[in-house]
Image 1 (cartoon, each protein chain N blue to C red):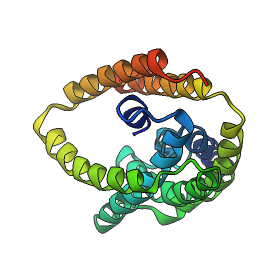
Image 2 (cartoon, rainbow over the protein chains, first blue to last red):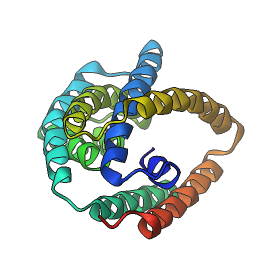
Image 3 (cartoon, chains in turn red, green):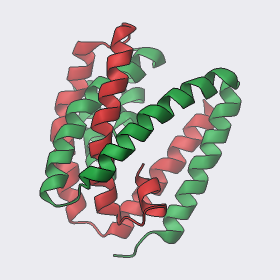
Length: 90
Length: 119
């Protein structure tokens, strides 16, 4: 969603990441609900990762405000390429 | 336990930095440290993403970085897109789908690097 906002709607990186996170609330809630209906969600494990994730996201958003937008784009591209490599090797 | 906490911290950090859910770290982390299979890890990471995305959005909104109108439109489109994705995933062999998606991600990465703002 971040590339979509940056490349199609001419967003800068910071507003793109903020708006993407907001959209993810809806998408993850919907998808988690469906997965829960199938009995695939391990609630305790989810909390075990999600609660420390709160501290992580605080640090991440704080750091992001102090970073050039170009750096955010480069980091994002690096994560995309790493994920692509992982997908092909899988 | 400590592994799960580190996975949460790192995934949350990436979510805050890059505006993604954190699943890119949560899913492999849950497989590795909590012994979940891929299927349950994907489902469970969605639960972990919800509070992370909520808190990240609150913080970003305070910095003026959330366009609510576009966020609602994106959310609605993505939920529709997810249904189409499931249909596509069932129609194509897994490896073909993964290779296509990987190629698309590299293409997007190149465009991001070339066209992103220099601010």
